[in-house]
Image 1 (cartoon, helix red, strand yellow):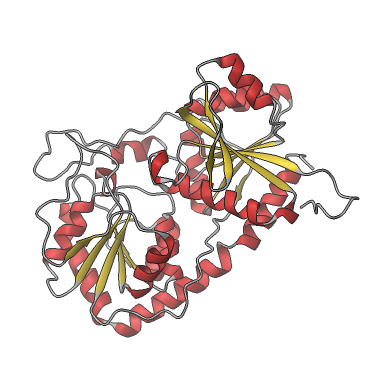
Image 2 (cartoon, rainbow, N blue to C red):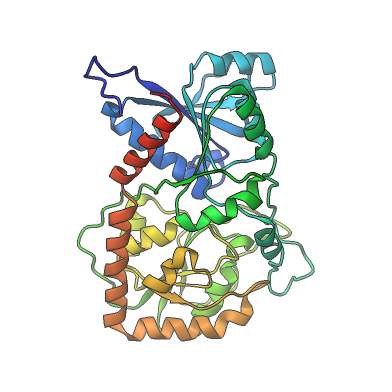
Length: 393
């Protein structure tokens, strides 16, 4: 990429990262899209020699006219404006060279139309074709199966096909990338377009645990929001079968009220940590013996990669990119409440807790995979290639 100290190189470029969440508690959801936004923003800001300046743009959140931009991760966040002309002028003033779209939501389109010739890189982090939407819709909370759970809504992202068609007429480059190769097959059914190429753009897993020392007492962790989509009740139910093991919830609910899951009547061996900061997360993951994931659907969960970086194997009813099969135990698919999978979860957890040699082997192999694949250097190399294809420098 361009080096700001080399006058023979091209000018610095400005990348607008557009998302609906930004991994800040006061900004709303704390999910994988926001995590990805934070990671790339921090990376570019910490490496000025790359020649990239960053601005964040909100897809859905509105601000008040005349208010200064919020600062998120030491970066300006431009909110949408009710005054469309004011908003357009605000965006144009940024002189943006490239849009990095954190997945796609229909409310991103105004930005795409305001900048009709600015190249787009769609980083498809959790594409959901119709068959996945059908699976997600089966989720129900045990005991209240007649109530539709909050947070299951899947956005229809096929309107991105129109963005691609119009962009082609205007000569705008639209490039597709995913954080894991297996998601490539989900792109056409989700966005309504079959791109000629989908590039593997890895995550930036930059946590560096010190020497990993596991807790003396068996500890099992859950790292996700406590929302119906993640089916946290399964984790609580598993804990009831292991009274001598400590179970830790890391995460907090985003939804409240009817259709939300309430963490009540939990077993005595379960601890609610809420949202935890990076240092505490690394410490807890490094001490844990197993990470359990009970979601109905995921792309490639960041929690898998962070857990493996801390040498903690995975027990899950999902197996994206065969990561769980390689570095843990895959218990099989269970839709709906997921309660039918409890016996397999119990069996898998017993195996991991009782076999120290297996746990250690899986954890160390998982850390090697994450360190080798999802790192800053690989991200930079691939992102640089995407910039060249987009002809931004």
